[in-house]
Image 1 (tube, rainbow, N blue to C red):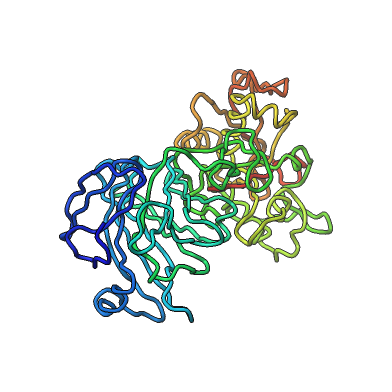
Image 2 (spheres, rainbow, N blue to C red; image 1 turned 90 degrees about the vertical axis):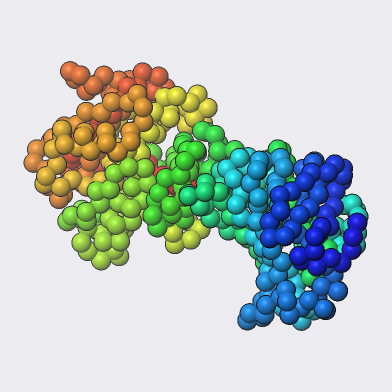
Amino acid sequence: MSKNRQIGDEEPSYFSDDPVDLKLKKRNGLSARINQSLMIFVLLLTSSTFLGSTLAANISLNGGRAEFGQGVAGLKACSASNQVGIKTRAEYTLDGYKLKSVELSNIPTSCYGYNLILSILNPGAEGTTTLATLFSTVKRLVILDRSGTFYTSQSDAAYVTLTSTNNPLTNTDTVLISFNTPSVLTSDIGTIGIESSENTITGLPCGAGGDCAAGATGPGGGTVVLYFDQPFEAPGSECDLACRGIEIDKTQINQQEMWTRNSSNALRNGQTNATRTGMGGGFYNTKLAFESANGSNNSNQTYGAVAACWNKSTSSATDRWYLPNVMEYAYIFKAVKESAALRSAASGWPAVTNYYSSEEVTSSYSASGYVTTFNNGGPPSGISVTAQVVGTPGPTQALSVAPARQLSPSHLYVTNTSFSDYMGMHIFNHEKNNGYAFFCLHAFK
């Protein structure tokens, strides 16, 4: 192996457990031969010679930080012909420059479900027995690529922060691996290597890269009811525009409550325009209704279905539970019907009753008009809806839902808790002080 080559040399070094040669395409004058196993060449960062004679050419100082070394790599096991880009950044400490971050870009969707494993070979070293310690006792950082969201083990998460972005034009992802406390001196870096593995990290909980099957325990302590391949948006929530899962809080189910009321048990009336439909819309509606308290100071909104969900214990100001909207109820009812594991984990719910949604009713509400809106909003397949107008729609009303096993000619509710004969959902408007049941949802990545 050649030692202490500088960036731009014709054949950068690499390290391998099982050296089988594989030629990489040239890019910016670089070419390399790497092993055909999962370990790949990423970048040569020479040791003391690099830091001495090439400091000005390859490290640009910027506010106590330095960027150095760009290279390319092919993640043989998952990236096909994609060339994965790499960029590293050093940060100055009292001990000298240390590796602060490694950025991998152009990671294709074919890497979904794979592990990416980062390691650093010391200058001039061969094999994997002289890897640098990244932090604690970890020499190989394992990162799971789960549908473009990246995770480490819970123990490693205390030492690194992962930030990822997606490029919809190229259908690729970029992940920035930042070391919370840099510990590897750049003078101790010979080669940075990445390997990919088909094995996923084990022992991760749902919401942190682990299994999010229906019935599993969610990241907020609830029961997972839904996990989507494609993200949905709940703007302002912890997962924001990249939510994938929904868990349900069973402890709130079947409490008969007003939609929202104050500490004197008085209904808080007044339109708040909480009328957003679609997956994730319940978060927006609940936030809007709670913060405006139906037109009053939110300190007056102490109780009710809206407040009960929004005030549920959370880890941050944005990590909130919320009252579902109509579309979310439809998906949940169907999930209960189709998943035996969910019915087992959620024995006895949803109950056969009427539920408040987070959607308010406007004076323009019409049954046929709402059904059209609902059907254009992406309802779950195989589920039908009927809607009804009760009295005169107005600002003191919210939409309510009920599971149904027959939608015509009469609206017959499901008569058992297994939901095996669930066929659809009935929607109707009713006063906010009616005292319907509700449950709370939590969206997560």
